[in-house]
Image 1 (cartoon, one colour):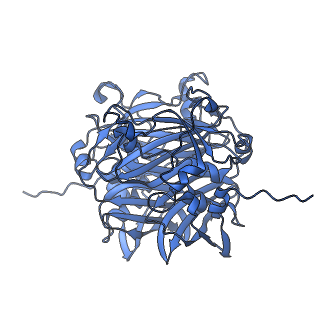
Image 2 (cartoon, each protein chain N blue to C red; image 1 turned 90 degrees about the horizontal axis):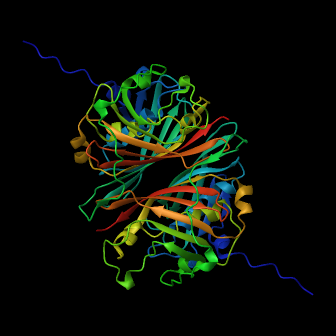
Length: 274
Length: 274
C-alpha cells in the first residue's frame, strides 16, 4: 500500500517564496488567484507577509501590516525584499518591497511582536448571523480568485444583474467566508481573507465602476494558537465605508471566528473611477 | 509705524525641515511637543508627512499615511528620507524613514493623488454634540504637548484621579479639539490631530499603564480647500477600541469639521504593558 502526500492548497502554492539572498525572496503570480488587473490583492498582501514569516531573523508574530498597491503586478516572476528596520527586545519593524523588472509594484510595512499575557477584553461583539451552512454559497466565476473562496452573504451582496435601484443599498456587507476548499487558518490566509470584500462603492450603487484597493492595513488580534483553534471553519466578515469622496473610498472591516473571537480589524482606501 | 510679522505657530516650528540632498531632510525635536518618551507621535507623523509635502517631486495631496513608531525619538536632531517609490499619472507612493545616529526611529508610507470630481457621499454622520464653546477646556500640564491642544470632552474623559470604578467606562471618547493657540487646518495639523486621543486602555480602565502607539494609519477624506474651509475652528473627534489582547489594542477614530464634514478616518494599534 502506498500513501500519497496530500496536494498542497492552491493558496500555499500562490504565496510560496524561495530565498535568494539575506533579505530577498523570489516568487511568481498564480493563475488561481487572478483578479481583473493582476492578482487578488489579498494574496499579494499574504505573499509579502509570508516573506517575513519565513525570514530567519523574524521574531514574534504579526500585529500590524500595511500594504500599498503601487502598480499592477504582471503575470510571472517577482522579487520581495523584506528588511528588518529595527529589532527591539520583543518587537520588530519590517519594510516590504515587491518588485518586477526592478520597479516597485507593492510596498509595505509590518510590525511583529512577542505578546505576553495581560488584561484583555473584546469590545466589538460578533453581529448576529444565521449559521454559515444555512446560507447559499455565492457562486461567481468572473475572476479566478473567486473560485478559491467560499462566500455566504447574510446582507450586502453585490448583485447588479438583479437591477437593484441605485441608492437602495448601504455600504455594509456581512458574510461568512473561508478558503475553498477549506484550509486551516493562519496569519497568511487571514491576511488574504481580510481583503475579500468587494469595493464598497459597488455595493452602495449596485453597479460596477473601475476600482481597486490602494492601501490596506490589518491589525491582528490573535496569536497563532487562536488562529489554529478556528481550524478551517468560516469567519464572519463585516465591512462598511465611512466616506466616498472624489475617487477614493475608505473601508472599515472586521473578521470574527465562528465562535465570536475578533481576529482582525482591517481598514483600506480604494480608488474608484467615477 | 512698523509692522511685525506674526510669530510662527509652535506647530510649524516643530515640523519644520531643511532640505539636505534630493530625498533627505533635517529637523530637530521641539520642546513644545514632548510626550512621556520622546515627542508626541502626532507631531512626528506630521513631520514625516511634511517631508513629502515640501518635496519638489511631490504630486497631488495626501490620501493615506501609515507611520510606524519603531523606537524612541531622542531630543535633538534627526534626518528624514522621503523617497518616491512609484509615480503614476495622478498618483504617487512614498517611503518615509526617520533616523537618528543612523538608526531608524520611525518608518512610514504615504500615498498622494490628484483627485477628480466624482460621485461622492459621506456615510458616517457627525455624532450629536454640544457646541465646543459650551464645554469646559480640559487643562492638563503633565506633558508639554497637552498645552498646545485645546481639548473639550463631550464623553470619555480620562480622569483617574476621580476614582472612577474600574470597568465602569467604555473605550469611546468624543471631544472637540484644535491647536492651541488656534491655527488654520491643513494636512500636517490634521495628521497630528488624528493622534490626540489617549490610549483607549486608559479610558477603559481609568488608570494609567505604560502604553504607546506602535503604528498609525490615516485616510484623508478632504482636499486642501476643504481643510482650509474649516479654518481654525475645532474638530469633533471620536475614538474607540474593538479589541485589547495581550499587550496590543486597536483604535478606530474619526474627525469631523465643525459643520459635519468627515475629514479623517484613522486607525492605530497601541502597546500597553499590562
